[in-house]
Length: 129
Image (cartoon, rainbow, N blue to C red; front, top):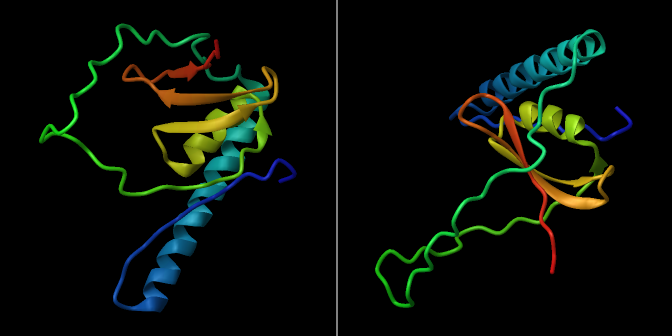
């Protein structure tokens, strides 16, 4: 659609054609789910998004040289398309992710949407000092 809704599917198989068929099936399921969500959204209220996520106490910073030190093993660049929080929920669901970084067109800021353990959503809205 005009907002640039992204669908993503991945499959591994020794037979390339079987993998392609499986990916196409996954994409068709995502399209059906997307269309169903659009219809449902017209008749029902939008999903609830927390106004602000409670972050609690900051995590302790590990000292340099500790064995538990992790390394960044992958870096990814991506376009931030302006959208509201409801569109971000839709995009996150379509991608099957537990969180989604987006440019909130209502707040004119970068936000992070995430799925909470209770099935609702949280919205991180960073503030710069």
